[in-house]
Amino acid sequence: MTYNFHGKYKPDKITDFKQAQDSDLKKICKFLKTDLPEITFEVYDTREGKQDADPNHSISRASARFKEMTVYRYWEQDNDPHYPHEITHLVAHTWSTPYVFKTELDTWDDKIITREIDMVSTSFMQEGLAIAVDDIVFERKLMEVGEHKYIEDWCRDQIDLMPKCLETVINLDGFGSIENKVVVPFAASFSKFLLNQFGLDLYKQMYISLYETASPKKNTDSIKQIYEMSEKTLLQSWKQNIK
Ligand SMILES: [Zn+2]
Image 1 (cartoon, rainbow, N blue to C red):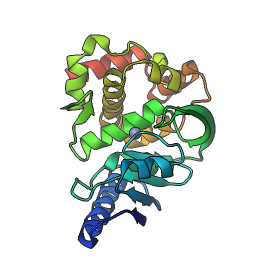
Image 2 (cartoon, rainbow, N blue to C red):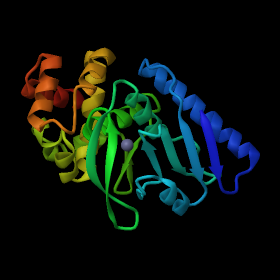
Image 3 (cartoon, rainbow, N blue to C red):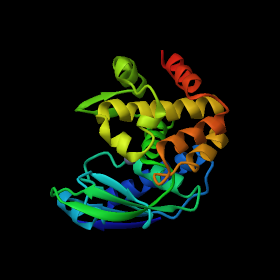
């Protein structure tokens, strides 16, 4: 692991930060049965510093960039150094040879930029996995619209709003068309269900079979084939499971 700190940090805080990332990475790799990847952390003491340096200039406090295998973090030294979410994205990125996905992205300063991103799986499954790992391994709650709740509570509280089929959310267009507080807990809870019910090996096989460059129907068919189940049965079992 390589760490670059940009800003004013005390040496003992830097040590705490490194230990937190090392420990989180080990837990994630153990759970996901993946070899430890080489990750770089670029750490900034201002939000502007992070936004400028991040190749995609996103507004988020933390971003994982696949091609660079780098986490860009805005971190103030008195805050909790743990943030396993972005590390999970990079660990899962090593599961297959990436494909290239050309897309438009919103920047922190309201510009739209076009980027070719190295991808494994789709955004729906990437987010779903990272938040499922936050939940299962780290027992972290999910924050949406200023509220912290466990993913099952988010789903139960909005059960009538949950997607009725996978095709509407499995690719980025669909995933981005539904409000985060609905689609994000659904993605996470669905990944958690697949991991718990059918295990990691099948999950990995399914994860790497999805492409933003394939149609939503093709991606949904891949899931049905790998789990040897109809979409209806899968979604019904998921729903039963969170009750
Ligand atoms: Zn994420």
